[in-house]
Length: 151
Image (cartoon, rainbow, N blue to C red; front, side, top):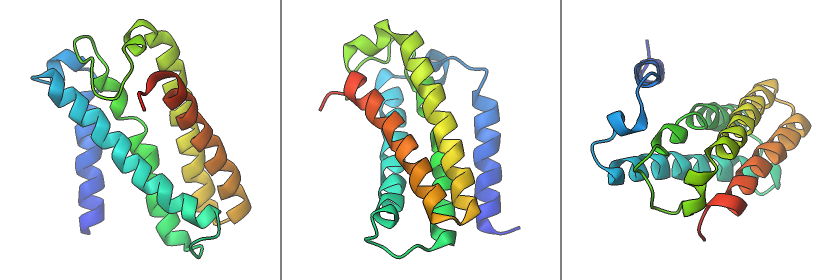
């Protein structure tokens, strides 16, 4: 088993263990929740940027590298939402987010689905499919940023 397999196994175990907990139980301080979600979003942004450079033709299409980034994005897409529980207000999130959690959840579900489709497109090795899936994923990010993120 290589290091990547071990990391994935550890991440999967962490996710499974975290699912039944509430945000308030997971984070000792609200600052911990804010750092957690900002870290997940920052890593997502880095990997979206890598794929974006390929989609724009700025970087040569390397299927293996795109697949790695897309797989990480798919995993990361599931993480930040647990850190938006009661008492975790702050960071770059607008206060309205806590009043519209049903809308936020619906948007998060769209984003998670789009990220999974991006991962599938990356695995196909088809650049046109990748471009389409990347655009859809990017749009879900933008929609949430427009409504819920302070600039």
